[in-house]
Image 1 (tube, helix red, strand yellow):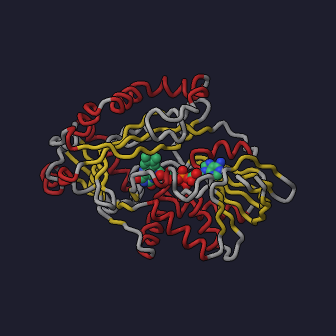
Image 2: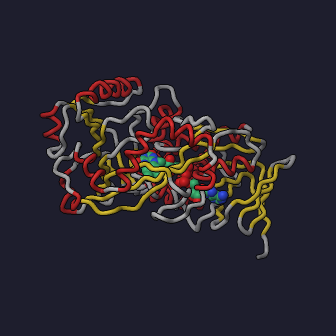
Image 3: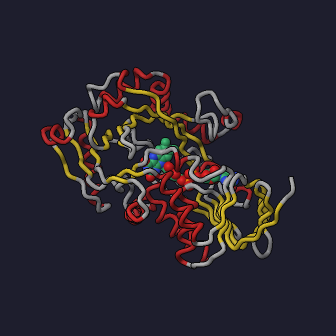
Length: 400
Ligand SMILES: Cc1cc2nc3c(=O)[nH]c(=O)nc-3n(C[C@H](O)[C@H](O)[C@H](O)COP(=O)(O)OP(=O)(O)OC[C@H]3O[C@@H](n4cnc5c(N)ncnc54)[C@H](O)[C@@H]3O)c2cc1C
């Protein structure tokens, strides 16, 4: 294969929503900047961005003052404005977080307090009002969050590519980054058939952000663990069972939100997910891609995680292996649900960063290396916050 030499001012690795939003912020801050976006796939949004629940989160859950809380606040408005301006389907449909057991009511109060601190409007709802809003949902108390919305982040990514192309941003598809060399004036990047010289690099490689960071010489013990999110979909005849997004009260010790019901912009309603450690970073089909398994056997972080979360991990695994268990969990929220109401929907895989000592990184995480900025942890709600993350990263790149 003959190699092509390409020069760019800034090269962005990854055409997921974070990389594309960063390219957009670079163009807006400094119009005419020579930006090249490369991706190993043949088009944008082939991984987390195109395989998620499509929720534009309201910012309810996050620790006040955290990057998640701050960046969701500004990011959600920006992405909804972008959707409106570019005819990307979206719907501010609201959500309810429902306590089904008395021990969850105290945690729901904590969540209401957190909503207040994060400036997110959330109304306390009793059983009668909940029944009026969601006749098939059972609960003893709930929080109604009117600002929660849905969109199709894959469609947002496609619109961003169109916009960026018209501003002069270049794209190289099917170009996996395989090597990076730091030089005095910038970097030399090997990606697919291209040898790229750039003054700056931005790492938005999602599932592979740790590997790209290591190639650039970032000294960090953070690595990505892939968690498979398996979903079901309500058959059309069962779609009347929920009207809003319906969530359980989350366990604050676990980074995932529990089995919930999510409306999609195409009219479907997803139920799930399970969150189980995936044997591969892109193992979307069961039984495919076991490439990560050898590293798990010796991973100290995983040993610590297993010790801390074995109970939660086991119940996630049980749900993953048995539809009966998933339905039993989901029926706590919607008692009328039956296994016949569900069909399998596509799975997604979340990139969750973890430290060597087994600490799951809760907040977004960024790092610098010579001539480069890295997005090391961008789990949910990073799609919601992507436009704000892009602003932050662009500022960091242009200041460096
Ligand atoms: C099941 C699931 C449900 C979720 N639900 C929500 C939700 O409802 N709301 C929300 O806000 N967030 C949600 N998230 C999280 C959200 O999808 C992610 O936080 C977000 O998409 C991250 O975007 P990204 O651009 O960082 O990563 P990605 O979308 O994964 O993009 C990374 C890109 O980098 C490319 N790449 C990787 N390695 C290389 C390489 N070596 N060379 C070249 N290119 C490379 C990949 O091909 C990919 O295109 C969910 C995630 C999942 C998996």
